[in-house]
Length: 364
Image 1 (cartoon, one colour):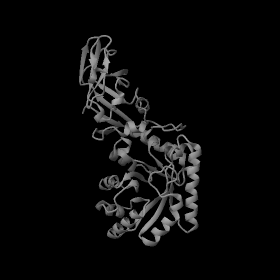
Image 2 (cartoon, rainbow, N blue to C red; image 1 turned 135 degrees about the vertical axis):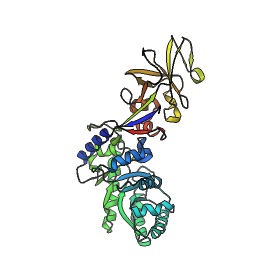
Image 3 (cartoon, rainbow, N blue to C red; image 1 turned 30 degrees about the horizontal axis):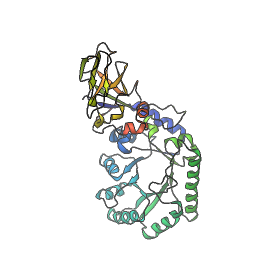
Image 4 (cartoon, rainbow, N blue to C red; image 1 turned 180 degrees about the vertical axis):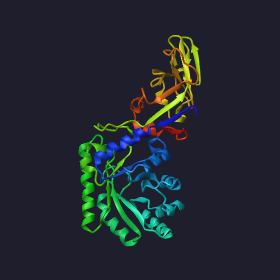
């Protein structure tokens, strides 16, 4: 094993504790583990959460992800956040298991109802309201009619929850307050017509921290539980993920030697180059070329030349004793996902979520 990810289980427990103290004992804590748990390892993280008494439910993006959890005997209640095929054969199993489905079209409701009859079970749904993100969701003006239609035509559908998604809780307080107001106006209208929701959730990590009034009775925490920050916070969050690889060759080259494809870097002096078995296939972004640094034996070493599909080159001239087999830190002590995100002009959770899922995740 030349390249691997380490997941710090103590850091995860610590971060869960930080959020539990923030939201209190009665608010549901619903970690988001979609997209390979933001690159941290889908099943590895799901199993950790499944064993933690402070975690109430698990949020996934799709029916496919929910099915994987069911097949692997994850017992925490599951909430699907984004998409699914209501006629998929796995939908029957998910309904029997009590998975909560997002509902935002009548076509979904009709097909779910059919599948629910096959499963001989009531279907739990969470009504998705589009309060301003303009992604999936019912427009606020259509919510009352939509719910009344579903209740009339499809009595085997149970509205367990209602939810929405902030568009910019990290950066725009005015818009966040506006969306929160719209969300509560919809709930008030529906409740005035006798519709009751046992779960109301809108807050993500940033909203939970920065806008505590939006916590409702459940929060969806993704980024924060992995110790990555999208906003200023007083919470003492610890990074969970470290990414390592191994030197596979060391060579000495002269001054004036071009490194990598298209020769984008030319050595200015005699240089010691280490080759590492990581490239953009692994999720080590090509934009890191000639810009990122790795840590070897506590020394910060710059990437030289273009990142290849499976390889990258590092200037290790500062290190006296280095050889094939030495460990290299790509993300961890000395290198952060935030620093790499800045190089790529992106966000820290794109950096970690794009790490190739084929790389082993090891719990430590």
